[in-house]
Structures are given as C-alpha cells and as structure tokens.
Length: 351
Image (cartoon, rainbow, N blue to C red; front, side, top):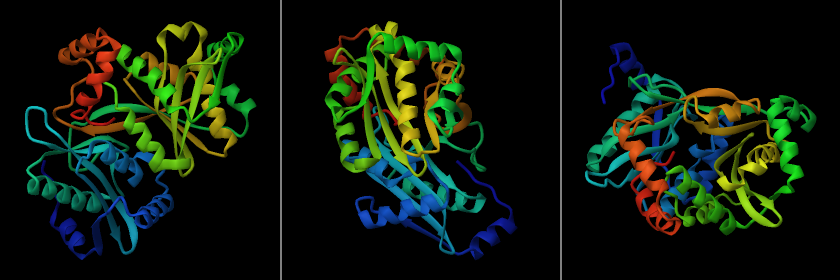
C-alpha cells in the first residue's frame, strides 16, 4: 500500500504539531479521556471506542493497537486494530469495524505510515481496513457496502409514522400472537437463540465469552432486549450506546417463529427503548446490498450510508467459495456448529 503526496503537503506535515500515542486500553482514566475527546469531535461510533477493542482482546487474547493522533491538542485521528491469526499464512493487521478515523489527509498519512511500521515490525500482513465511514485518500478500489441509519423523532407517535404500512400491520400481529419484548440480563437465553440463528444463516458463531466480556466492559452502556412468547425466549438484541447513538450489532430471532412477526416488534421496541432514553439516532448496522434485510430496515424509515473496506483477502458476498461454505455450515448439527464456530471465528475479522 503506497501513499503519494506533493512536496507542499510533506512540508505541511513536517511543520504540523502532531503527536501519536499507543494507548493502554486497560487504563480507565486514559480511555475515559479518549471517549471525551471522541464526543467533542462528534464521533458517535461505539466500535471506535477503546472498550470494543478491549472486548475483542479479552475474548481472544489478540495483540491490539489503539493509537490516537493529536494536533495542537485536538484529536485528529484514531486507529483501532488487532492482530488476526492467519490460518494458512502469516498473521494480519486488521481494523475493528470503522476502526480508522482521521480528519484530513495529513493525519491519515501519518497514521497509515504508523500502521505500516507496525506491520513491518511484527511481520504482519495488511493493514486491512473495514467499514470506514469515508474512503481513504491514499487507497483505491474499496469494497462498498451500506449501513442503515435513522434519526429518531420526538415521540412514539411520530416513530410509528415513519414505518411502512406493512411494518405497522406486522407489529399489531405480533402483539396479537402474545409476543412481548423486555429488557433482561439473561445473556444465556439470548446466546442460545442467537447461536442457532447464526447456524441457520451459515455463519460461524462468536463465543459466549465475547458477550460476557462485553457486559463486563461496557456495563450500563450495553443493554439486552429479549423477545418472548409464553415466557420462552425466541429472539433478542444486544444494544450498545455511545454519545447520542444506539446500535444493534448482535440480533436474531428463531426462524421457526417468523410466522409470529417477532422482528418487526423487536425493531419497534428497541427504537422505542432508545427514544425513551433520549437518544437522537439509531444505527441499524450493515446489510448486504439490495438484500431483504436491507429493504426491511428501510421500511422503518432508515437511510443508507456508505461504508468502505480495503481488504484483498475478504470474500465477496457473491463468491462461489463463500456460497459453498455458507451452504455447508447451514447443514451442520447445532451442537457441532456451536463447538466449531468459536474456533473458526478466531481467524475471521470482526464486522
């Protein structure tokens, strides 16, 4: 990966007062000050906080690199990367989703140079960048996907007005079927349902320790909502909160319960949950382009925002190898998928 700059830009870089620091993400005082700087910079993406990288580190014992870049005392860049083990080749330096942020070309260059230096020092492949909010000046041909993002209205009545008629109808149907959504601490119930849903989708599951670590690290900034029918958990969603945004990175309902319309009710209740607590925005996450999941989110009033990734070894969604592996995984017995999934996920980038 190369970066070209003209002489004037280089001179400007040399004259600018920049300071890069590798942050100890276990240092609570330091991470608190970084989060304050993120808020002041109007950055509201929870994956960019030190806490998320800490959850990944504590779950898999990865070597992690959280770098900050300040110019004249102002935050101008953040890097959140980890060393992903290679399955058949050397380890790779990979970002968390959205784990590279900079304010301009100068801060981008100095941070990319630092990442290249880290990769060379530790003999790593990469660096690879995933789900960035804007394209990088220095790299070309990104993989572009889209996340669904919505601004929350002032009240629940206005919230219902954002939905398509089919969504409102399905919410009423779910309530008639006796479905209820409630806040809970029952991570075990959620994981049991979520892991089955991941198997059904053909995706290796993250270990349950990941969610336990997330609750320990994020504390009150994490919430769990469960969908229940006659007291039995049939679905749920993990919510993470930062600044003025709530997001739902881990969701799922049992496919055999779709006839009861659990997903429309779950979406409505989690949006209402965020609205009741004064949040301004909801990040519904990334979906495959033009997929049913993406169209479903848009029916709630969400808007699409692009995400840019730079990763040569990332399998395209339509690649034959990915389709074959997904199809095979769906056929695994659940106990085998839950046993093998966490072991395989160690070699798969997050996001």
